[in-house]
Image (cartoon, rainbow, N blue to C red; front, side):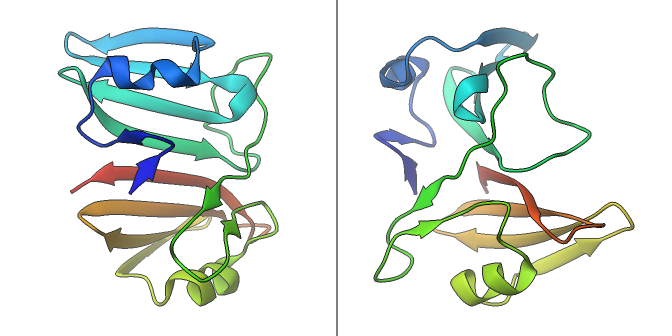
Length: 142
């Protein structure tokens, strides 16, 4: 479970290959957020270690408000013989075919969140409650 060469627990310097973020903010004394708006993702560090990754895949009321924000289509390697591309075209049935039955599901009128745990990493797939399309993929260590 890594993002390029970046793994959970790596130090902030390990993210240098991503280039300069569009926004950098300390949200708590030992917690910072790095927004890569044009890449459609955000990474967060706690006590100097990678703690969270979010890929913005489709429209969502809770997206960062950056003028350069774009949607991403992350590639997942190693889950199947072929590479999997996550996009707004993914719905719950597609995700369950790719990853199997979720460990748990949280549903309300606005969204459904599918939870999976793989290699001590929690993956959340947020699906729009109205369209049924994937809107966000969050990853963080257990």
